[in-house]
Length: 130
Image 1 (cartoon, rainbow, N blue to C red):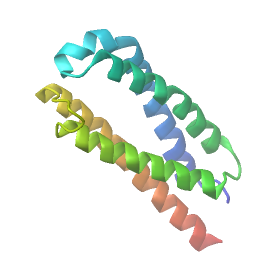
Image 2 (cartoon, rainbow, N blue to C red):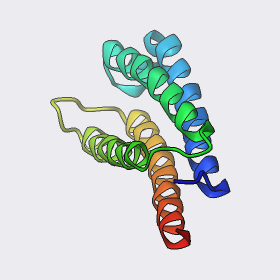
Image 3 (spheres, rainbow, N blue to C red):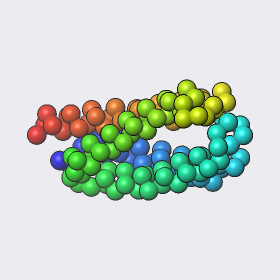
Image 4 (cartoon, rainbow, N blue to C red):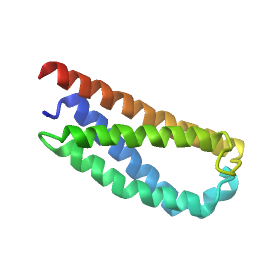
């Protein structure tokens, strides 16, 4: 599958957002835990998980012909991230984030959903062009 400008933007933008968020959460977990109402370990773990994910997104987005399977996996895992974020913001998983925490979770979920929508659109356009 050819890497179209829209797919490249969607993957590399997602990679940049994940890298920034990952660094922010991993480095600032202790300071963010109380204001967000979320466990420090959860914040740090999420941040550390986002860093290799960002590298995978960047690698996939930089390929001249990214694997369709890789792009579908990215879409699937991003969708899972958004759904889990919505549940977390709603107080599932035995956690009750503060209002600021819920807002933070929903904001990053909206960004992830936006990149996922772009990835789906780019994948559809690539299929039509083929």
